[in-house]
Every structure is written in structure tokens, then in C-alpha cells.
Figure: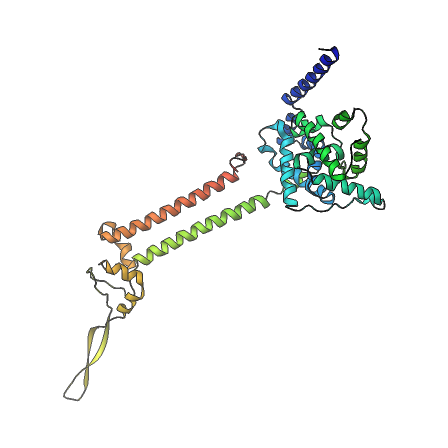
Length: 192
Length: 203
């Protein structure tokens, strides 16, 4: 086996080992415990750490103008019921479930056309492209949709998505690549 | 490597970068954490709602108990007319009145009045058939039920078999209602107990 291939295998193994170690000692357990005991600052840290995640999940289903309100609803619901969370290390996955439920309640069965943020008013080409892209993403299956929103809109890396959602890095990677392929097909983009 | 850029932003991929630039307008904005403590600090609404729900349950249970008691009393209560009645099957309770009737004419052509107790047939037979429940009971050759006032004064041992049965049924209904009320009260207490953690399993 060539040295480069051995090095590549070692690198892959090390990456996986680090990820596994992070999952064994998740960084949010102590934050959740403090938040449950009434530490407002701890909950604030949880809010700052997971807001991109929650916002991305909500945005995958709800128009931009309503996403902010739904995000607040999600964190309020989380604040009220944080003491019921048994697996504190899975707080991210728990927030994702709440976000999905709230988004589904907010717009059940509808797929509204996107309204552009006011920042883009007057820039019609960009306006159309952004709305078209987001609408196209929202037509994808849920797992692809959410992963692409977290990556392309919220700017999270694959590892960050895996860590905060509780998914395996391999699943996230598959969702990203297959999601992008389907997005290109919908937008009629040929991969160069 | 283009694949690495999609994964961890290493390398270069113009297509992915363009998507990021276009869609960046939808990215979340950094805001301060909300102060949920103030919203949670008004617990009156939620417990009040729970109290309203629990009150409605208690009210429904109390109403059911009242209905059961009313039915029981109507079964045991006497027919109208009151008075002592013979404990004979099919006997009819008839009130008595005292009335002055014209007596014989004396030698002075004065009509004497003779007070006489006269049994006046009551309209009980009509009332008997008016209530189908009572008719059904009498068809079973039940004795005439004693008056409500006399029940209170009687000892349980003095009751007939059917009366004891009716009394027992009433007590059973009341005990069932009481147990239901207790279940409701226990549920209320469990919900209100802050030591009890409400999880998805026991929600």
C-alpha cells in the first residue's frame, strides 16, 4: 500500500476518532445542566450556539419573514421544557425536533413563495436568484433541504452540522453531495 | 478540491461560493439571547389554565354525583300525599280530611253539622301511572315506599329487602363518584407538584 494511501487512511481514521471523542464528551452537557438549574447565562450560551442551527432548520420550511418569530418560539419552548431533556448531550437534535415541529405547525401543508428581504430590494437579478435558489432548496427532500440550508445559508461546515444535529459525518456528507446534485438539476445547472 | 470546499470550506469551488453569496441574505442575524425568565415568571396563566381544566373535571364529577343522588332520592322518596301507609303490595296512600257535612234536621229545622272524617280518594292512581319508573317498580310488587321523613327516622334494619337494595345501590353510586373525584384530585396534585418532572412518557 503506497505511503500516501496509508497517510490518507490514518488521516481519515484520526478524523473519525476525534469526532467520536467529541461525541463522547459533548461540550454542551454542562451548559444544559447549568441552564436547567436556572443559570440564564448558560441558556444564553445555548441560544448563541444553536441559533444558526435552529434558524436554518426553520428557514428550510418557513418563509424568511416568519423564521425569526418561529425561532423565538422554538427557544421559548426549549426554555420551558429543558428540564425534561434526558440526554443532555443531544440538546442539538432535541432543538432540531422542536424546530421541525414548530415549523410544521406554522405552515402546515403550504409551501409559500419566498419574499425577499428588504436588503435586496432594487437588485432584481440577485433578488430573483436568491428566491429561486431557496425555493428550489425547499423542494428537496427534508434531509437534503435542511443540510443544504445549514451549509449554504448558515455557513456551517459539515463537521459542525454533524456535531450539532447529532448526525454522523458520513450522513451529512451524503446529504450535502446528493442535495447539491438535485439542486443543480432543479436549477438546470450543469456541473463543470 | 471542490468536494472539500462543500464539506469544510477548504479548497475552492466557485459554484458553491456563488450559492453562498446569493443565499447569504437569508442568514440569521446575531441577536442577544431573549429574556425568557420574565415570560416564564408569570406562572399564573398556566396553573390557572390547569385549575380551570381541573375545576371543569371536578364540576363534572360533582354534577354527576348530584344527579346520582337525585335519582336515588327520587327512588326512595314517597309519592305525593305523604302520611303513613300500609306496607301492603299495591296499597294506595290516601290522605284524610276533616269536613263538616250536613247532618239530620232537628226538630227546630236546624241542620246539624257533623264533623266527620272522610277518606277522600286522592288522585294518586293517576300520578302512579304518570311515572313509568314507578309503574315498573310496582309491577314488581314492591311495597309502597315510606316517606322521606320516615326514612331518616328508621334504622337500616327496619328497611325492607328492596329498600335495602335501593339504598345499597345509591351508596355504591356515591362511592364510585367519590373515587372518581379522588382520581381527579390526585391528578391535579400530581400536575401541580413541582417535584414531579413531566417527561415525554408521562406527559
